[in-house]
Length: 162
Image (cartoon, rainbow, N blue to C red; front, side):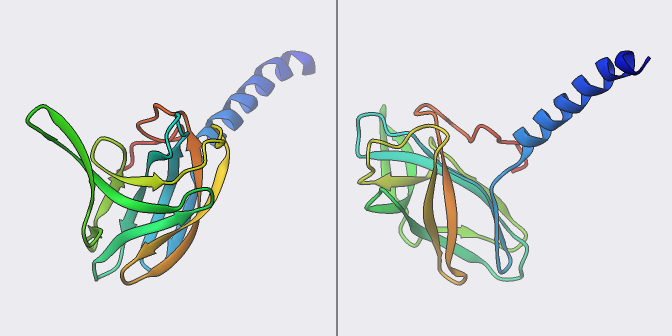
């Protein structure tokens, strides 16, 4: 009877453990900001790669994400992708991205995103890269960026919360 019970309980327990590990996200709190899922694409023969994250502002004042740093990159900038006249362009966002009080934003390639410039090509999928995010009011926040596939549009553990 015990072995019969174990054949049902053990697989269910393993399934729950797998789901919970997939749902875990890198999360950082700084003042009224919550930062989740900072990530970068694995470089693909280029010295730059896009990345993203989610930021929620539970405070009563706005803040701006200005950029950041990452080990293995010369700098991290906030960029926006635009499509004009059949051409796609990426350019830095002057003054950063505003996070209004009560707002949740998500940055990802294809729109507003992080651009890792001067990136070393040896970053592999699944690695974590030490870095910081720079905010106008909150200041510098240490984070780890998870390296995702070169074609990623969102982190592997993305939960569609924002």
